[in-house]
Length: 310
Ligand code: HSE
Image 1 (cartoon, rainbow, N blue to C red):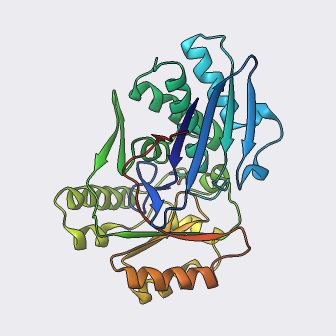
Image 2: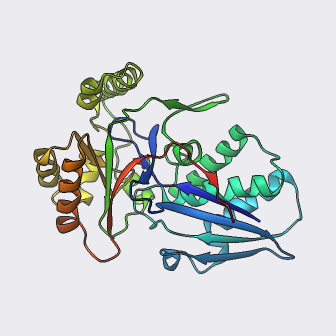
């Protein structure tokens, strides 16, 4: 029996649309990610359990796990069947890399079950392709951190799919999901097809400056550069009172605020736990729309996908 956990992630992190992502873990030990268990079986069986299993499609062939199984099985040319249990702890369409959690956990578990026929690059490639089938376009900013852990910069050049970027160890990451869903494909469809020259130059400046500031550990410079000029101006209409909320949270003492992936989860960065607690309380009270929603105070998850003892 193989059991794998893959953590949630924040895509884009304001400054790196589609190419920067961070894996996260709540500081209080709550599991914010999906688990996959694989056991031998005479026929393919897929079982869904977990808090958000009710959001999964009833048709097995529409389940991400089935898509992963189909791809993997074709590549390694096997007829062996398995039973796959998905513990779906992540809400779908939340902006926390929910599909990536399922894809990463399934492919890592299958690869282990079949004695590692694929290497890390091959696995990550398939993860990006399946993510693309679900969201409309391939993007690695959730699968790469969920697989490798930490802060990942997607390079996607030959075998350099993703590279780890040093992060600021004192940063505390808060995520707040209001309890409603936005599909990644619809949040992508509202973005412009083209950006003007000044926006391209500004985006290059912000992103390259942020990567430089991370490598040289210049915290204040990194914070100043973490601006989203690609997605936020268009996606903020999907989040009621976005600008007022941003101002409020920065006033409480956050050092950064933005949309996590395609939303509606928002993320906040602080460097003092007292401020993080105040912001977490404010978000609990003001941003959650129903009892499904949650707020977590997190740190970066440096382990990424991992084996769980069973
Ligand atoms: N980079 C992707 C987007 C992440 O913003 O559309 C999706 O979670």
